[in-house]
Each structure stands twice: as C-alpha cells, then as structure tokens.
Length: 360
Image (cartoon, rainbow, N blue to C red; front, top):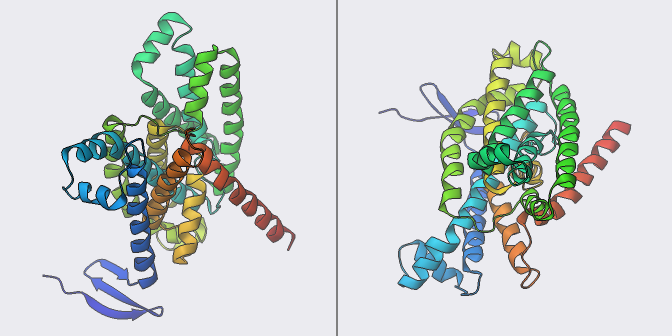
C-alpha cells in the first residue's frame, strides 16, 4: 500500500505517491464544499416550488428515502428531473467554458461566444422550421429528433472552426476570431429561418433559443448524465496540461507538452459537453462565460478550475431556474433569460476591463 509523502513545495504542502503529486489547497476545498451546499439547497428550493409546495427539509427527507408516497411521486417523478437537468447542463457548459477559456487564454472564449452553441441552435431551428413545412425532408429530420440535430450542429460547427483556425497548429486569438465570424453567419441563418417560418413554428423556436428547462423529464437527464460520465473524467485527466498552455505554445513545448495534440483533445471534450448540454435544454446563455470566471476568483487560481467551474455552473443554472419560475408570479420565464440578465453586465465588465488594460 502506497504511503503519501508530505513535502514542502512552493509554499504549500504537497502529497506525493509514485507518479502522482497533489498540492493541498485548503481554500479550494472549503469553497468547493460551500458551492456544493449551495447547489443542494438550490435544488431543494427548486423542487419544493410548485402548485403543491414542499418545504426544503421535506424535500431533503424524500431524497434521503423518507416522505409519504405523494411527496415521493411529486419529488422523484415530477420535479427532480428538471432540477437535475438544469444542474447537469449548467455544469457541462461551465466545464466547456473553463476549457476553451484556458486554451485560448481569453475569458471571452466561451462556447456561446465562439459559435459552438450558435451551430447547435441553427441546426435545431432548421429542424423546427422545416419539420412542419417541407414535406418529406421535414419528416425525416423530425424523426431524427431535435436534440440529435443540435448535437450534430454543434459538432459540425466545431469542426469548421477548428479547420479554419488551423495554421500549423491552433492559436487562441485565431480560434476566437474564426468562431466570432462563424457565429455571425449562423445567427443570420437562424434569423432567416425565423422569418420564413410559420407563426407557431417561430414561437416554438423562440422558446428553445432562450434555453428552457420546462417539461424536462428523466429522458432529458440520461443523455447529459452519460456525456458527463464519459467526458468529465477525460477533462480532469487532460487538465494537467492547461497550466503549461497558459504560458504560451513555446513554453509548453519546452516543458514537454504535445501542444497540438493536447489542445485538440481538450477542444473535443469541450465541444462534446457544450453540444450535449445545448441539445438537452437549448442555448442557456452566459453560463459557460460567467461560471468559470466566478470559480477562478473564488479559489484564487491562475486559470478557471474544472471542478469548481462544474459546481458554480450547476448552482448558477439551478438558482436562475428558481428565479425564472417564481419572480414573476404565474408567468414562468425560460431560464436562459435570467442567465442572460445576470451574464450581460459581466460581459460588459470584461470588455471595459480589457479596454482599460489595452490603453494602459
């Protein structure tokens, strides 16, 4: 049995065994525990809200196996899938954003800013609009399913961005510029589809484009759960090279990092997470942009941390869903509107900060 060896490195205690070395960061552990507690309470509050209100202690009791049969049916069958979908989708978007921001060394380089979610949106609106208006083609696409179309749209867009940005490797600024250009083109396609669509098709497309958790069931929980189970361990395994990549390609190569291979694999993981999340609940805005930056400031690291971003993204989405369901009485808003209201000021803050740094 391996014994952990305690050493001092860079002012922090290190735990080393064989080929594994970990640095003990008490601030990270404390903030992560608080984030998980906020997420659990947010989910309990979200589950308890509805025509048949259930208190947070009763919701927690049902989740632990207690409660009567009525409460168990309401919590486990009707309301838990919605909150779980929100938490998983928010976590997946946040991890995807943490990876793309670290690779590009730019806090603006999130999947919803470089066109990945726009590609998924264009494919989904294409299916919604043509699914009822163009006969055989629409019928075939409709049978393929809206989530599958969004997933394929995100993957195709990511392939285009990566191919157009490739010049003997991928530079972060080129990736962002190509993504912004493709996003503009894809948004134009979305708007054209909405113009030619029938009224009820356009209304359905608008609801999906705003990102909604309404009527989410266990069938929506399963795909994003499987994606996280496969892609999240890959993200943690590949994340060790992000520390070297943040110093630039030349420094990373000097440290022995296969830059292009590592960057390609990390981008593949980020694209998979963002595409599956968008396919499950629509393009929930700004979670991938804001959550990694909040996580980085909470733990005080040099780049967005994967694990903390996961928790912050999940908590942000669930709490936003609580606000969307309860802040306007009987009128329930799509969760994407609340996240956009919260995220837009932060985007303006980032742009203003970079403007000051550029003039300095």
